[in-house]
Length: 328
Image (tube, rainbow, N blue to C red; front, side, top):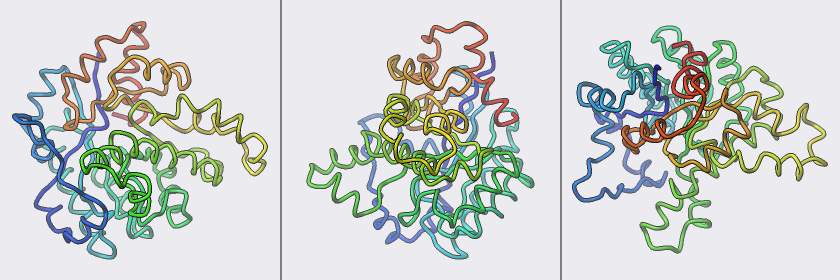
């Protein structure tokens, strides 16, 4: 059984270091607290070689699809951001070329320059062999349904590659209103992996439906992580409460999502959310992921080994669906 993990991250400190510290502060980046004796995730993310491969081998993971983590070109407007995106993609392509059977790539895009995103996606897919792109949260308060990103979405359709929507930090006004006034560590985690990341990614998807973006691009393929970012438990309620206010849409909300969105298990390794995802999205829409280096490969693999599925369904979850979607 081939095991593919597709929300797995890398960084390139020599490239990310180009970003002005003022831009990092404005976006809300804070030092990540690491438990005593534990490895620093950003140090693990920077290594795309023997150590990473050894950890994959120990967990029985055959292939990682890698994507940029941490500060990236979405923070940098203009030509500098476009150049940074290209440099990060070239860096990843070189790493993939050193171990082509073990690594694949999602492009990072210059989201602060929407008019340049489609061209970089095309280059990354056609010239570098990448399997799609990862978009991190909002950019300058803009969601993917903003008209400025319509050319990017159309190009993803034309290339027949998915866009992985990954969480990011909230814009400053949201951060202050929703997550402020708490002890610093508690507020930081509530804004991020403790809650805020997941609600924002779900909101991205819902906005793409409600804005009519998915109707305009019915062949657009999206991926979201973390067992569906809380959407599985909300699909039926969304259909019910929006029923009288979506005459402009061609499909019910749940149908649009279930037809165009795949989800991964990244970072969520307990049974109840998996069952909710399975009962709503179905086994053909769920793909295994770990969220390395923020979650350990061994923990993700232990969850996979606990899942009780028929052999054919297990093969889909472990890697078959990902292989088909990404043409791996």
